[in-house]
Amino acid sequence: MFCRHTARLLAASALVLAAPAIAQSGVTERSVAAHEAFLASDALQGRGSATRDEAIAAAYVASEFQSYGLTHAPGMASYLQTATVVRETLARPAKLSANDLVITPTLLAGSGATVSGTLTVASSSDAAAMPEGDVVLVSAADVDPIAFLRAASAKHVKLLLLTESDATRKLVTMFGGSPRLPTYLDGQPPESRSTIAIVPADQVAALARRAGKTVTLDVATTQQRNTTTNAIGYLKGSDPNAGTLLFTAHLDHLGVLPDGTIMHGANDDASGTTAVLELAQALATGKQPKRSILFVCYGSEEIGEFGSTYFGEHPPVPLGNIVANIEFEMIGAQDPKLPRDTLMMTGFDRSNLGAALKQHGALVAGDPYPEQHFFQRSDNYALALKGVVAHTLSGWAVTPTYHQPTDTLANLDIPFMTKAIRSLVGPAKWLANSDFVPAWNPGGKPGEDK
Image 1 (spheres, one colour):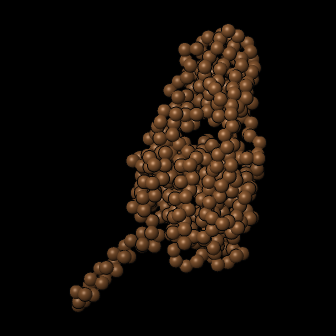
Image 2: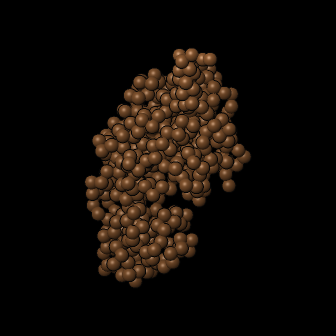
């Protein structure tokens, strides 16, 4: 018969064995919630792109990297990488004129220049039926504005005019409450884009009667120069020829709306930043990995993926040495279309990386929203265009809190986040110590896809 002392030892051993994932990974609900509590706090004012608040978030991440024992990346003298972003802002409210009619629309996005052309009216609520023309007014209110934005871009419409509605007002909030005007890295040309404005509902009929007439949207802008900040930590591998892994997320969100509402961005993308921090701590603990690992949290994703673009143009290691990039974006909610505790991987079938991670225990699955083109809509894409096998892991990508004031700590599913991150620690360690080199599947590499 076992003595009581032996029985107590066996009982204690059983408890340890019953929770190996927590003990080995170090990822806990408490640590996940702690990162979120700071990153999504009122103090950081929504971490607006290329703002002081974004820089504070980057400094927090950098200090955590340092505490985990990560070092500066090769050739860098600090944990921070900065770049200058040029932003155009309205010098005065935009004015829309058509003969004797003058309207003050809500400018949503544009080239920053005055636009003029012949007015064409689209009466159908079907974006696929939108006519071509320099200036197109969508007179119906019950439309999907995002679909019309895509149609306008595809048909090279210079000026798209939407009717004010609940959907367009929501879109203004999603855009951060201010028009998206040309924004670009210093030294690079601004991207060409259609101009989109929202016409007050009570003035749409009068404007529609000017079909065939010349319409002019007067826009005047000024320039601002701001600094965006990436936080970068480096874990050196034991084999200099084994390549480098890259785990990333973006730091920034929408900041503060003109009415003073803080857009906390707890899910987008404080949750992804938290995932990078948790993996950095887990992978920095224990034996040195075979492969080197870069942990990067980018700035200015929300205004054009400028942090990741700058990183891709100024990488601390050659891009050819990067074996794979895994981006984390909005992992704070369970997707009802996916199995419990599972993250989706954008572009899952484009490479063999997702299947390999899944085989080694990662709770990942394919993207159930291919029509949303999420693969092209996150920071992974800047590197994928340069040939790096790069994907984004996400939770409920179409959650109702997306770009809304409700994206707060209170609306996160912390247990889901914790389980999802924890499931990736083992596969990440396997990838960091294996000879497996991810590759694009035939037709999966950007530029080769149909």
